[in-house]
Structure formats: structure tokens, C-alpha cells
Length: 124
Image 1 (cartoon, helix red, strand yellow):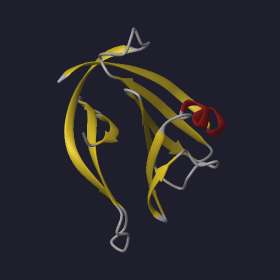
Image 2 (tube, rainbow, N blue to C red):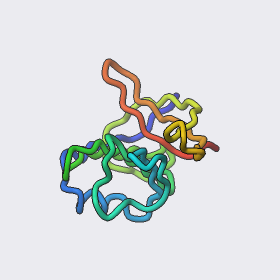
Image 3 (cartoon, rainbow, N blue to C red):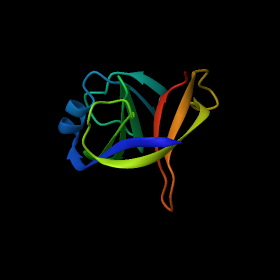
Image 4 (cartoon, rainbow, N blue to C red):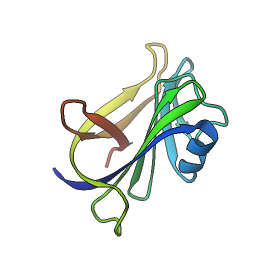
């Protein structure tokens, strides 16, 4: 575990969320299964979407046409905004439905506590 920086951006409309995700690879699970790529134009029918680029990880909890956004930055990032948090890294596999052959090996970046928050990055 090490100290990372967490910046809670709060509730945002989807257009602002897409701007925050610019340049990120995103993953989310919806009715079509596992999706990997740029943030979709419209908010997906999903509960969460995660994005990553260059030591920066974005967690999006979707709520209709708005979302709650958090940004986590690796310790090596130069003076990022936010509060210091401890991060536990664990391996996992994201899978779509039982009929979806697609899967993605990832690392879960978990901020422990009474209400843990999890970010996602591709497995290293």
C-alpha cells in the first residue's frame, strides 16, 4: 500500500464527465456485455465506468444523465490536487454475461475503509 492522491469531483452532467475522460481508455459493463474503448457519447446503461491514462484513474458512478466522478493519481504524479489516500492493489478479471466471451485482466485500486472505493486499471 502507498499514498496516492484522490480528487472527488462530485456530481457532473455526462458532457462534463466525457471531458474528464478525454484521452482515457474506458471499461464498463452494460446490457451488451463488456465494453472497452473511448467514453461513449451518451451515458451507458451501467452503474459504473472506469477510465485510465498515464497514471490517472477515473471512477464514474452513473446516475441517469449525471454521474459522480473521482480521480485517483499515482504517487509519482507531480503535485496533483486532492487528498492523500492509501491504495490496496489486487488482481481481478472483468467478465461480461455468461454468453459474452470477452474478459479483461485488471488491477483493482481500492481505497479501504468503511465504504471502500474502487478504481480499475489494466493488469500489469
